[in-house]
Image (tube, rainbow over all chains, first blue to last red; front, side):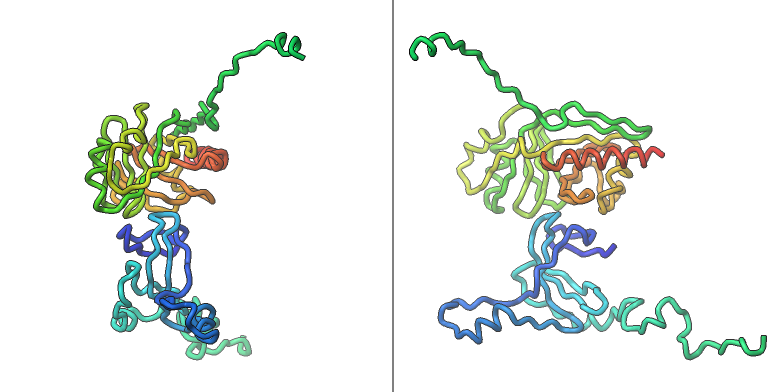
Length: 129
Length: 192
């Protein structure tokens, strides 16, 4: 089971206790009635949806019930860092580069659970048998 | 009309409290489940500035560390969140009345009848709870006195380790059938 660190409980907890709450760091305009329809659409509906690192809100709903923010890789599902709500975006360039992809990530299906890549395997000796 | 009314006898109706699953008990080889007697409970929320005054009013020092609890004279405060506690009074006193004297900002909601307490005790207590709760319940990670809101199967519970081999599971009354049945099955599995 995936373990997620809750910055309020200060420890790793099982993913079942958490719930995702969408993208983080989306600031609501202080004058929401003054903005144009296009700007409102961007604020309200348009999300970055990247392939790679995304900043998200998460809630430890079956634990301390607090919202917090997390930087997560959408490809590997790896949580790079979690931090309290209201704190600025942490610098994750080092953490993201150091950790590398998870074991199963970024590999084509035929290479999963295979020790040698398919190309390097000795050809089958079916014909000689 | 007046005669009929006069003839009608009035029988005294006394209200009787019927806690869910009262008295239920399950015994397996290494673990026993029992529904705990009714207790006074409060959901308490308060900012850090109010904690000292509320602790004084309650007579229990509200814990500030995650996953910790504090008990005194039958009254326990369980840390649920950075500004949230579950207060359980098993001594029959009313913590709500005590909090009424505190003149600091706080929110106290009586939830005595919302929750049911289940005692899980015996050498296999941790294994029984772990059958539906994904937290690490080893003594190193979840020592005696530790408490946490978490999940058991599909229900939310508050788990409190009252002794090395004893847990108190607090769940909502409407979930109590499910939780007790779940734990009963788990107890039989843990014994096998």
